[in-house]
Image (cartoon, rainbow, N blue to C red):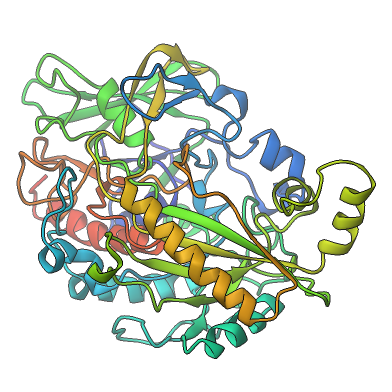
Length: 550
């Protein structure tokens, strides 16, 4: 039974954001006997609310907040940022469960090297390239907890880091794209492996297995087989009787008292009224764009540059993960639009190799074309020698829809001060908040990495017998769904925002846990690491609370 708390009486915790991290934090704190108000700026959608509607989700941005989610973008600070909405530069779902509702479910762990790469490779001039203050070994038990608590399907591969327990569920069935990718990669002496996914390959913990509808990336799961916090953590938090979920409630400001401690969170409720919930502590899990925006909006006399921003690092070091796509057409039908996005991946090029002449490493997967839906196929997966109108275009669509596959290349992004989230000085969203301003340009090494991975993808697809192979251009990106690094973790208060336990250096009862805590970007799939960090953070935060150290 969901709890109900008065706003003027302090609760133990206000958790802001109900996504991959916030859902975990809420479940874990309530399980520890603590009272939580969970604020979510989007609605509480149920399985019955999700539908296979490409227009609503891909073009009208229904899950992303629609027209009210005003954001601006520029490549450099020398440019004037302009509104961008199709898609917005910071892509995240505004709904209970956050982006864990609409993500594709690709679910890799980071490798040990991701946490200590600066020590291995040395400094990279002009970047904020640093080691994490924690190691893979510290995080491994929490990765395992994610596997079993939310339900991850997979099987260990040749390059996987050490694990203390097997996957919770067997892997998803291999798709046609996976079979072809595996055959092509093995011809080249490479080592393809099962793609782990946060989707149930069989019934688990009272939830049904995947029905292979193909509407994963960008859509909510109508059967609950996708392991979102909507389907896993949040129902358990509510059932504890210690969590109140307040939906359509957008945080406007975090207030502090005369001692510089967090005292309450002001928010706009679904009726447009300003409310304020008092709290003994706050855990900010809003994502790598909304979290720095809220901290910057919470500036005060005591915190003139934004709450917890004495280091000046709030909003800096935005990392999006570099990515590129290579498409292929085969003679025979693949019908790859069905089931999960990817069933096979390749980690042979995961580590950075100085012999390549640039920093970075990553992965290549085999998947249905981007989106796996008819409209997205028709608009995004057309060879350059096919016109995008007329009879020839129609013939290609009819023939290619069932015979197409994509290899997505995913990789590192270097941390740069110049890539950041700030408050737009002129544009506002529908609630009157300063618009999120994204300033972002990929480091040249990120672009070189993607060209390198594309070359490998072309080799694999050719070896697999593709009739035609073509590439998406590698060029500076204009945003994405992986919003990392904007409130980085570190031991030095002058160079980071949170410590190794996710407590902000300046405010002892304010914690931040989401993609903004990242120090390096990993190789393209951050959500599992976000959730492992959340399980670890919640354990420490609950212990601090029990000891009276908040």
